[in-house]
Amino acid sequence: MRPVLADVFAARRSIAGIAVHTPLVPSPYLSGLAGHDVLLKLEIAQPIGAFKLRGAVNAVAALPAACAGVTCCSTGNHGRGIAYAARERGLRAVVCMSQLVPQAKIDGIRALGAEVRIGGNSQDEAQAESSRLAREEGLAEVPPFDDPAVIAGQGTIGLELLEDRPDLDTILVPLSGGGLAGGIALAAKAIKPAIRVIGISMDRGAAMHASIRAGHPVEVEEVASLADSLGGGVGLGNRLSFALCRDLLDDVVLVTEEDIYRAMQTLYFEDRLVAEGASVVGIAALQACKLPKPKGPVATIISGRNVDMKVFTRVVTGQDVKLGETTIRGQVHGA
Ligand SMILES: *Cc1c(COP(=O)(O)O)cnc(C)c1O
Image (tube, rainbow, N blue to C red; front, side, top):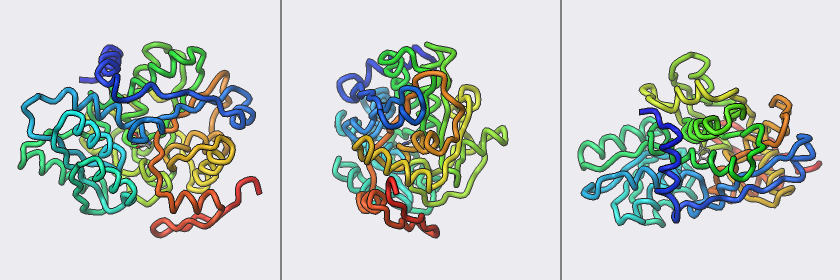
């Protein structure tokens, strides 16, 4: 059941022509900071603005021709990927989301022709609704991370990284449910066993980090974060992504909301790129000196750009950002 390198190569063939081989570009500013090349893998250049298109297209391509449609739960980008992939195949798509999901992401999914169901305050509730639809309406359910086709799809990033830079020493991967990190680690380590793959999460509600520590999937409280795409649990019945991350990640590092805030500014002002909070956790960890010293080139996945532009504007202009109960104190870049 656990995907292997051959599944990742097969995924690459199935997503070719829909998901793109994204650019890997140097960041002169971060390279100066790290003392080695720091490269940005621009998944923001995918047609849906996030890497999740890879796993979604691979999973939807594997559904039987006669299926009635597809459903999923999502913090936003998986839903967008499924909506896009379903539209490509002419299938009905229903995306279930919690109330914590930003409006920009809901609008993006509706614009692709998918139905959206909003309900509950957590990913778990959205998950329950998606499973109900699968049972009662006969839709195929594609989970956001704990699925072999999804993991193999995300793993294609690992292939591209090592083709473009065989000399990579470390890959920094935003980490939530672990489909991205598990897939990349599985592919990259099969090709280059010495490569280090480090998962990065926000310090509040880091479900995979807590689960690896506990030795089994555990629940954590879900709180609002600048890295909204990293919210949600790993699922108590996790079958694949937990074990992959536990076995293959060299480390899991946590960053604060302030670290993420500063990293969004850095990416914008130093590299001129717009990205969501989840995308910059690798940069945040580098800047906050939370990583072991690299011995060679480092790549980090700029995983998505589907940020709420009101929040983004406040961040880059150095204003306070209020998220649920907490306020992140504004700070002007370079001041
Ligand atoms: C889903 C997502 C992640 C985390 O991926 P997992 O497979 O859940 O670990 C990171 N960044 C963005 C932008 C995402 O949409």
